[in-house]
Length: 479
Ligand code: NAD
Image 1: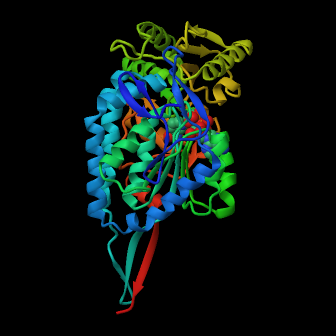
Image 2: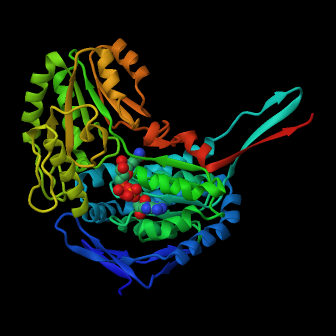
C-alpha cells in the first residue's frame, strides 16, 4: 500500500504518527468522499498494539514536555498556528473533500479558527495563575501541574476544529497527546502531525492513531498510563468509554449530542428568527449545537412558517466546493439511511412534512421541516444529525420552557425575543450549556463549553480547559 494519497493536489500521509515516526499498519480501511462517494484512499487501520505504542510514546515524552518552560511551550504552539495559517487552503480543500462541509466555511471560518485555537491556549497559558493567599500566616500556592498522557477522541463533523479544541489546551497544559480522529474523516489529523513536527513539537508529544474506534478505542481508554480522556461524539460511545475508563478512574470530559431548542416568541424580530432557524441546516445539519427543535409562540407560528419556507427554498444544495453552495452532502451512506429512517418513522407516526422529507441524488438529503410532532415522539426526542428540523407551537412562556427542557439533552438553546427581561427569565430556567439570545454559534474560547444531562460531562474553554487537563496542587508553606 502507498504511504500517502493525493487529495485535490495535496499529499496526505496515510500512516499513523507515533513517537515522531510514521507507522504503517498491516491492514487498511477505505476513506470515501461524501461529495461523490469516490474512494480517496486506504488509511492505516491501527491495531491495539499500535495504540498501546502511542500511549507508550506519549508517556516517554511527557516528563520533558511537562518540564518545558511555559514560554517555550507557548512559542512552539504559536509556530504550529503559523504552520496551520500557511496551509489554510490545503487544509480546507482536504477537509471539504473528506467530510463534505463547505469549502468557503473551511477557508474563512474553520481553519483560521484552528490556528486561533493554538494561539489562544498558548496565550492563556502565559497568564494562567492563581494568586497566593494566606491562612494563619501560612502561604497557599496553587500550581497547575500537567496531568500526563491524554487521549483525545473526535468525530467527523468538524474534524480539525474539534481535534484542536482539545489538542491545543492539552499541549499548553504540558500534557502529551494521543489523538484518534474519526474513521470517516481521518485526513487533516495527519496533516496536523506534519505541521506540528515542522513547528518543532518534540517527538511523542503529539501522536495520531488511525483506525476504528471499536477496535482500538478500548486500548486507549482503559490504559492505566492515560491520565485524561477527552471525547466528542455520540452518547452510546461515551457510555462505552466511561465504562472502559472506570477501573482507572481516569478523568473524562465528554462533549456529546444534543436536541437543542430555538424558542421564537411573538415579540421577536421574525426575520431574525427565520434566519436563525434556517441557519440550523448548516453543515447539512451535522452540528451538535444545532437548534433542531423550533418552538414558536402560537400567534406568529403561521407567519413564521411562511417566511421560513420562503427562505429555505432559496438554499442552494450541492457540491460543497462551490462558493454558492449553502448545504453539502451528508457524511456517509449509513448516516443518510439513518436520517431517512428518522423522517419516515416520524411521518408514519403522523408528522406532516412542511418541506423536504426525502433523499436527493447522491449523498444529499433535502432540508426538511416536520410539524404535527408530539413531544414524546422519537423525532423530537432523538438526535438525527442531519438537515431535519421539527416545529412545535406553544401558548405561554411556561409551556415554552417546559417543551425546551423536555428532552434528555442539555447542550444549547437559542431564544428569539424582543424582550430583554423575558430573555433573562427564560435563560435562567433553561437546562443548557450555552444559551444564545437573538444570535447563534457565537463562541468565545474563554467561555465554558459543554453540555448538561446526556449532552456531556464537564466544561472546556479558557481556564476550564486547564482545570481539566491539569492536576491542581496547593502547596502550603509555613511562615
Ligand atoms: P461516534 O461516537 O460514533 O464516534 C466518535 C469517535 O469515537 C470516533 O473517532 C470513533 O472512532 C470513536 N469511537 C467509536 N467507538 C469507540 C470506542 N469504543 N472507544 C473509543 N472511541 C470510539 O460519534 P460520531 O458519529 O463520529 O459523531 C457524531 C456525534 O458527535 C453526534 O452525537 C454529535 O452531536 C456529537 N458531537 C458533539 C459535539 C459537542 O461538542 N458536544 C461536537 C460535535 C459532535
